[in-house]
Image 1 (cartoon, rainbow, N blue to C red):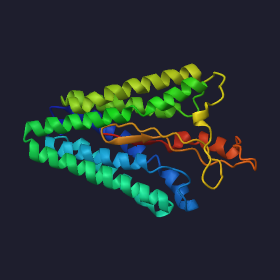
Image 2: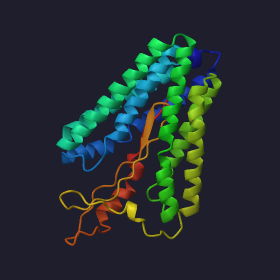
Image 3: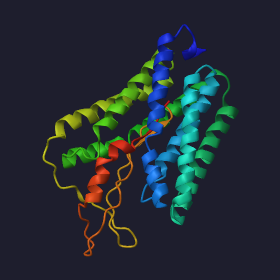
Length: 290
C-alpha cells in the first residue's frame, strides 16, 4: 500500500500534507477565472499553463497507476485533471477565435499526441519494472524542463532590482511544496518523485534569497524586452509573466498582469489598474503538483 500503509506513517503524513497544499494551489486561479467570467473575456491571460498542468497531472496518474501503490499521487492529480479541465473549458468559452484555435492545437499536440505517444511506447517497448523506470524518467525529465521556467523571472528580478513579479508567498509555497513531496518520495523510496523536487527546493530558496536581497532595493528601469507590448488594435498591454513549476503534476503559474490603459500617443503609462494587478499577483498563483 506504499504511502498508505502502517509501515510508512510519515510517508502518509507528508503525502497527505502535499495533497492539501497542492489542492489549495490548484484553486488559486479561481479569482482569475471569476474575472474572466465576469468580463466575458480572457483579458490577455494565456492557456498554456493550464494545458501543461493538465498534461503533467495525466502523466503522473499514469505513473502512479503503473506503480499500483501510490494512491496519494492519484488523488491529487485526479483532482488536478478535473480542475484544470474546468479552467480550460472556461478559457475556451470566453477566448477570442485565435486564442481558441491556439489552445485547441496545444491540447491536441501535448495532451493527445505526446501523451498518446508516451502511452504507446511504454506499452509496446517495455514491460513490468522496465516500463515503470522508463515512464519515471519521462516524468522526471518533464518536471525538470518545466522547473527551468522561473529562470526568466529570476533574471528579470536581478536586472530590474524589483521583486514585484516574484511574490514572496509564491516562492514560499514552491519551497514548502518541494520539501513535502521530496520527503514523501524519499520515505517511499521513489526517486522519480523525489528528484524533481530537489531542483524545486533549490529554485524556491534562490527566489526567497533574491526577495530578501531586493525587496528594499531601488528598482532599475525595466529592460526593453519587458516593456509593455502593443496589441494589434493599438492598445498597450502590461507585460505578461508566467511561471510554470512542475510539482509532480501541478504547475505553478504567475498570471499575466491586467491590461493597462494606453495614452493617445501609444506610450504605456503606469496606471492604477496595472499597479492594482501587480498587487493581486499573490492571489492568483497557480500550481501544478504530485
